[in-house]
Length: 232
Image (tube, rainbow, N blue to C red):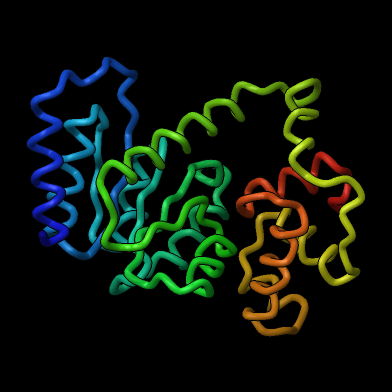
């Protein structure tokens, strides 16, 4: 069964179920495929979400001027401004830097996933995907973001977060410099320019540090650096 037909079928099945009452969260869905936008938007709305849409990164920035969604779901390869450039701009602004970002991409190789996560995305899903899995990832990210926002700046919340990082993580001098720049909010391209190395080298360092710390994304990595007093 074609992927789009599976979404339609799942949507029709969802309509027959009682949708649980929840606080309506706002999502920004970005993709240059109008059929995907239509189907995924319809599905997410029937699951109780308010969905804004944009056809590329540049269009999304215009939407973000007037809205501050709870999560961004974004294609990677798009005309005018791709997902990588959009994430870089979103992470640079304090108003939007906290927003969870989910990448949707037809490119599913390991290096593609690593690049997407190291560029600043929190989740990387490969097309075609099951709509139920998309919803599960959205709900998980929103719950995690809610927990982080409720945690105090010091106390038990921070200690419980640190338990997931192995003690005495050994970073090289270069990795320490890179992770300090990550904590300052710089994108991989900007770090590469500042250290006079290739962007691929920075992506490799970020990937290695994620493996060493057992963290999931750049946001968690930056927070660990700050809480561990490694930031400059």
